[in-house]
Length: 353
Ligand SMILES: NC(=O)c1ccc[n+]([C@@H]2O[C@H](COP(=O)([O-])OP(=O)(O)OC[C@H]3O[C@@H](n4cnc5c(N)ncnc54)[C@H](O)[C@@H]3O)[C@@H](O)[C@H]2O)c1
Image (cartoon, rainbow, N blue to C red):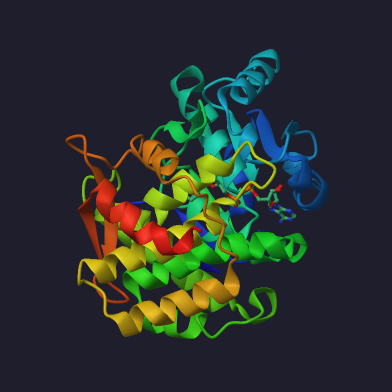
């Protein structure tokens, strides 16, 4: 069992099999309370049984199931969860366990952070993306009117339990999805991690628990220094300004892009912008370009104006300007960099025909 060392500022995070962690102790604190488990259709089928059969205190927990997928990270679904909690008589001293990927932890955290002005929730991420990113850092959120994470709160869970055993049932595409955020953590903060990750050909077979844990620790280190994203935490948005626009653009189409896939393409384009702004060398860019192209299929619409319009909604914008992150060499990142439409158009041009 490993407890990360930044837990003074952030809520506790435990690493390792749930059965060895202090999960049982936590449940004991809620022995006189109601407990709900939030799952989606897949974590209901693949992950829930382990919790219910492994922990007696959860045998009678209220199970609330969401439809799977980003398109369900919306207010209408929150209403249903709040109604279920209300009908079941949940109060401020009860507990919500969010068992799932980033959609479940983002939505579950949001639901819990405003229900009766907030009640306790615990994250148990089951996707790679959840483990290295979404379940860590205290951001909750849902999408609105097609825009990502328009509504949300900063609210740390009571605790987070990361058990990589859940990854066994994760589909290959979802490994690739989460891997993108791990690559991002390496690109913005850890050259050595980038060097090892960029040698990986088969993510499921070759990615080690140590690499996952390092990615998670990078995020915790950054969030601990700037929990509410006043400054440094913005580096975690590398690849996301363009990535979120791509993700939103394709959300309701026949070819939706997963969050990680969109971020991977966003990282490639934002790395290219870093070269144009002379903060990243061409050699370093080529290593990023080669690896991202070999791992992710590029999907970029021939609609630069449409993407730019979506980027106008980005939460990092300031003074009416689009702000992005640039790499200052692999392993370092600059935030709050101004992006003009002309520069955006220029960088996109070679990728659209
Ligand atoms: N709060 C944050 O700081 C933060 C950071 C990054 C991403 N996010 C959000 O996270 C979301 C993406 O997360 P995600 O990629 O985990 O999406 P997701 O929750 O939709 O999970 C991806 C898919 O994997 C399935 N799944 C999850 N665990 C499984 C398992 N163990 N076995 C089988 N199937 C499993 C899910 O049912 C889903 O179909 C986005 O909404 C994004 O905005 C939030």
